[in-house]
Length: 317
Length: 282
Image (cartoon, rainbow over the protein chains, first blue to last red):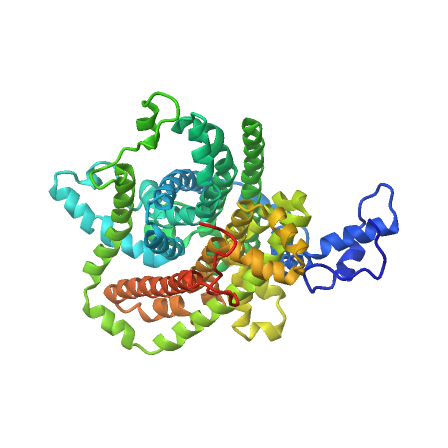
């Protein structure tokens, strides 16, 4: 394949590839000018996206990261990070991780089942439309309004609590309260399950009915179909979606704060209080160190995700 | 699920026998859907009972209701258009030309979801130029980042389910340029994926509170919060109303989208009504 300097512009993306390209050293081995140009042209299509992410995601995060290692006068210090990994902040990290794992795995499985029920419904066009829009609404419904809703429902004098009590089962004498971890999990399901349904539905569309019919014609039972066809196709998407839920749970905070009044010290709540200014002077940058810590947590989660995907890939073959 | 019931049936290639009820509808599906509906509707009903009908009239009559709703809708439209314009070509490009970077892109696009919105907006405000800070456009620009994980994953999953390479090669060999391949071949095939990307983005913008309140713009959720502090009942009523308004809005988009797609014959594709399924026979 021959490339000339006058080759037509990038396939997509009107951005200016030249400036970005200059910084990119390219592959080291056997560099020829056409090869470099080809490499740059291939990357040109993602330049608009890259520029956007750099401006609105990377740059703010760099500011936070630098701030985490700065004292108030701008000098280098490790005291913020040190404070963020001890005492109440360490506890906050653990609580966040526990809550996020619970509220990503449980709604992940439930959401998959519900999405499957919606997806396979006969004459399900209307059902699917209502379900997708409902899921879109509920997935973004959180914060103080959601807390209100559940206090009216499962609070100590909520509607459902009263029903259960009149049936002889008072949840509040059986270890359940809305204002503890178990209660928060129940509330989180309200936006996590719809989120799962939304993100897994497109993956379910990838399961062609023809595959099922083919498998059945070859004598496969339902289990065989899921073991050798449906499961392997779906598993990578499923893991990715659970990871998404994990991140969503990790950064949600208004709901928990409204429900528990800080008795569950989540990292996100602690960061919020730093940014709201309820802080002792001279410690503002601990909030940035906590933010950095959350990024580290998700990085670890992603490493686990990639490792699980590798295993899944082995299982497919 | 049905799996356990079917496992018992022996023999080669059993006909599609499912655990069905008298109306030919799977029982497990009904159980799942009913339990789900109860879980999601009960809190709404409890809140409705708590608020009382009278509180709703009070909410609609308050000052700022229309303007804040209009701002939120405008932001939703801008954000959705920007998000799809940015992500769709990128995702297609990555799938076709840079498949090795797919996992990397998955990683990059998932990042915004874990960065607490509070941290993101503080960082953005620290580096944004003054021209942008004065307009609500900055909100939309930040919302694009927040919407990215959902929109990208929806579109990515849709692309995975397609035999993209074959489709694009077929289109190119029939003489279609890149723009018309993207617009008339890929877009229609991604109908569901784009619809769910749109729904996710719109719902996110209509429900977002943290960033808007920190950026001092009175979007609908912020208005609810500011104007409903007087009474718990009005507050709950406003929350329910917000949920309802968003739902109606999204249902309109979805119905419009599928209504458009059911119409036969050629015609142009618009982003909001997504597309018709010309190339896919389902």
